[in-house]
Length: 196
Image (cartoon, rainbow, N blue to C red; front, side):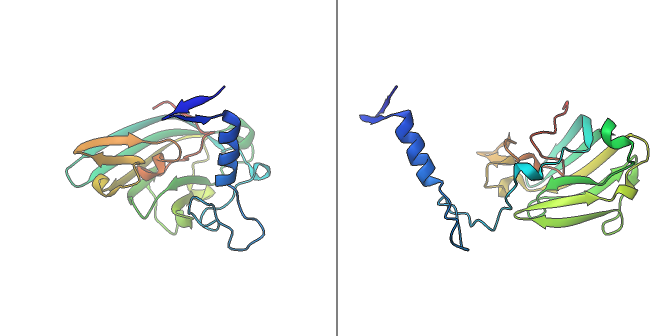
């Protein structure tokens, strides 16, 4: 099968060859980079062998948006439950994805108790993103708990067209893939599903 676009013929096979060529990685050089422009050392490589299932089920998520002309404040309330296979080992650290360069973390609480940075949670850089890790000791010993995360940011400054952004005066969202981390701290992984 071939597709004709503006008088040019493209077969699926030739497109696959071009794509393979465009996204080829130069593995021999320590300065390996993708042809699309991002240096290889900016984004860590994730291998299937390193995959570990997320230890919690996110049962439900409630999002509250306070949209203003120059700022958005988002309050995310989630109910999390330790997965059955993990529950017998006790509480485990909770890792959330976000982007500190774009969002400001205003508050984070578990079961109504506000957490303190450096004591109950830490923020660490992960390429252009930020990883928020809540210590296992800060998670309740019960298998289910409420997590509240409040963030703020300026949607009009979001030029990535990912997460929550402003375009022609309208608020828009695009959260696939990994755009939700530009709105709030959340386990922004394709294997974590919930009811919103």
